[in-house]
Image (cartoon, rainbow, N blue to C red; front, side):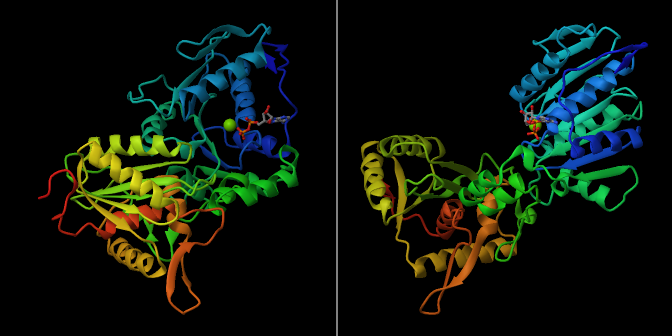
Length: 423
Ligand SMILES: Nc1ncnc2c1ncn2[C@@H]1O[C@H](COP(=O)(O)OP(=O)(O)O)[C@@H](O)[C@H]1O
Ligand SMILES: [Mg+2]
């Protein structure tokens, strides 16, 4: 790399074609461009951007590059990787771990932002030869992306958004699609079209295919966007709302117990009196006793009117344990034990599906929740009746089951209270 006539050798790897093409695209469109790269996991996304950032900072004086990562930890990792690349070279002026900034002897600098930041972004302006990097963009809230985008405007700098894909909505998807559709100023690269097998063997890929929920595998290991439209629930983005009225009473909470296997969760969800989903938690690492005491705490804090718990299989034991603890702790809640059969499942699912399609309720935009909901299909049983379950053996239904259970008791009259007082 040239800096004021000298050649500086950065100790980076030789880039592969997919990585070189990003740099080529950047050079072909050096200003006012939004470049979006969709790629699967671990194919050198961050690496090529580190090299691009260094190249712009070292080759040009007084440049500012801003890097946004989903978390502070990821910022720190990239900060360390960049400083390692230039260690011992006569270009590094100062690398400050405290505020995560890297200064070069020619006046250029790299600044980091974490997507988890609650502060408004009032950073410096990106300079004309610098750029704004939004790494793993689907994990960064859209609001933050839109808050930080104007930092490139004054100097007509480029933006690079690079990410494993997720759902077919949100800023990353929109920008990627703009590039594919040829919208002025937008350019997109699809790294799924390149051979990146040097990063992952076919055997390992097959291992992931078998062990991950279908849509998760498609997004993370094939680099494909996931549809958020379900045949049954319709377009989930229409009823997605992470915000809910925090003051509204929690009407109904559902618990679907884990069967103890790796991908199966205990899922807890709830709706409030405004028919908004207001709770979601899923876990598969807690022992039975831990789960029960955790749920007791959840009940104490959230005070749902009704609690619907799955009671069959493993649920039988859990539900009995839970009932004992509810009694012991004097928690007053109307407890409904839900016995899963094809008929009972069909009844609660149909009610839930109809309400979702009518837009009568709102759901969280949580990825696992959406992936599980999108996967639910109607199947015909031997007797010709319909049942609802996930299509893909690696995807589970615990969150949808829990939602359907909670929703099934939304309109019931809370006349019987288990454990504590009887109304
Ligand atoms: N061109 C390359 N040659 C050799 N190794 C590379 C190259 N690009 C990336 N890597 C290595 O591959 C791994 C994944 O790279 P990274 O940039 O973190 O991927 P991503 O950001 O896509 O998850 C890292 O260990 C990185 O050092
Ligand atoms: Mg990365």
